[in-house]
Image (cartoon, rainbow, N blue to C red; front, side, top):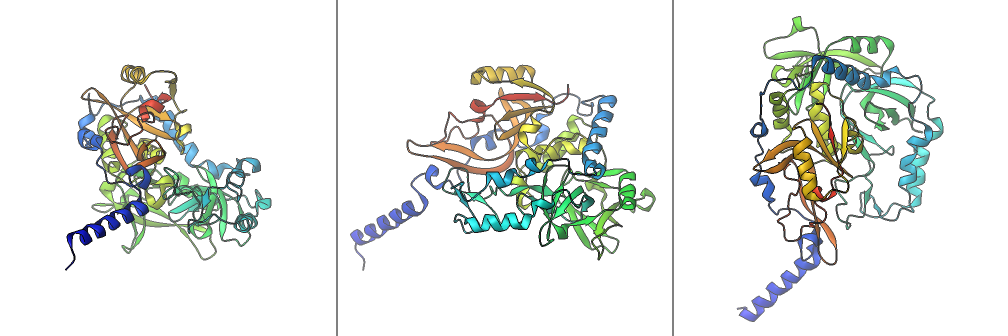
Length: 453
């Protein structure tokens, strides 16, 4: 029988092994699991933040029509081009940013890619062909927009705070079925296409797009649009077979309303024929999950869309269909015909921007409470954007998708992972023992943007 001393020795050895493998603190291991007080103290039901007439429009009919015209203009912009909108220098930025000399990059095996891998990517990209194909296309199934023509990930050193999965630096965003494309050229093997989408430029798998001729484009653009207001809305063909799903904020042309059946809404489906040419098919989706576009921009409808997004996992670059901070806000405003760019810094420049630089945390809070308009104001700091939702029990409330809480000890920085979409204060996690109180959102906040008055 093992003595007490023997059992104690085994326990101590096991504890030492855990410390060596996982680290001795939340900072070292960069793992989640610690409850964040804000997620319990702030209501996660968006309807709790409604104050005022719930059905009163936020914007006038004139403003709404202007916004809708801008939305359609941005959505269909790729089909109006004869040549790329970007310069070759602009689209070469990933090749300058990510090289074998960068030093802290890691591939799927968490080892630094060799120079030969980067050279193979350059050869595959065939950027000397940029702007030589110049055809219109359309996304036929959900696909990733990539910085290199590959689905292989490229991380920064995962031992660094806030790095590793899901921060794949070759991932720009996800493109959804029905998004118009401008196709600049194909890769050397023809298996990837360099495209300009309504959101950004990058590489997509050739199997996920079809080339659209004039007849297709004319028919697609002539139809009224519907917008997904529930997450994971299934689109099926006339035989009832699943074709693809739509996320909140996805728009798609509607079919003939005379053909609608009880509980079903007819929609157009983009398909690729054997030659890779886009053809239009007819399908249907659940009526309650698809609304006429655009929705009225009011408190009630904003709360309904937020309820669909609240609690969703965080996903850098919309990886695995999840949203990061800017993707979430883009999809939140899309049902109302309000176009936001894909990146947080660009979103912050969309309306009336007020600087918060140089203000103390107390002065920032006072400025936001005095001038911010709930559900119409964005709060921005480098790398992150949030929606101002008003106040709760005297504290500023924001709605955002966020990865984690910055932590610090005397020796190193880290992250306490949260990875969700939620209502919080501007200082979530400040109660954690290793929270970096000099790096809260409130401390780093630089501006507020009023989208509409």
